[in-house]
Length: 148
Image (cartoon, rainbow, N blue to C red; front, side, top):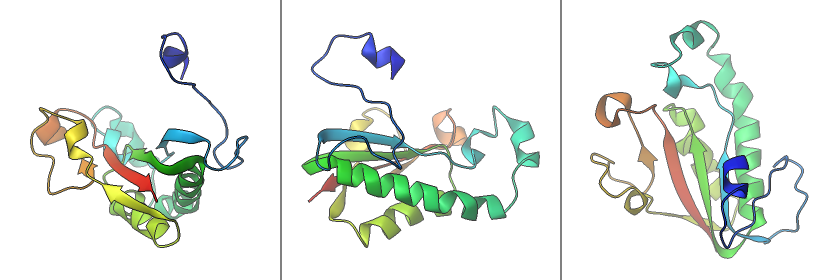
């Protein structure tokens, strides 16, 4: 957010607690929610993290991840796009969160693969899971949702 604030552009940067929105529903065209997670996707850079995580950590993050994505969708105007990102490859923190929220919110997944032109092996979509052995990066996940 600090880096964006220093660049001129036709946008407004808002940094706030996404669980207690300080804005009206439907206020934004685009929302990025980078949720807290287990960090399992960053193990190649932080191998010691494997000793700090337990299986029950997944369940601990789930309500917060779902709540943040729900509020992000509510913050987007109809037709607006929400990006859900996490540095985890675990389905409980990626696709399961998105699928659960889509059961209750008025939104649809859109194909995220065109947002990363030139990046090979992005899978069948519409969401993206990056892998260290394929992409030379952390195991990051991205889903794009359009509010309907």
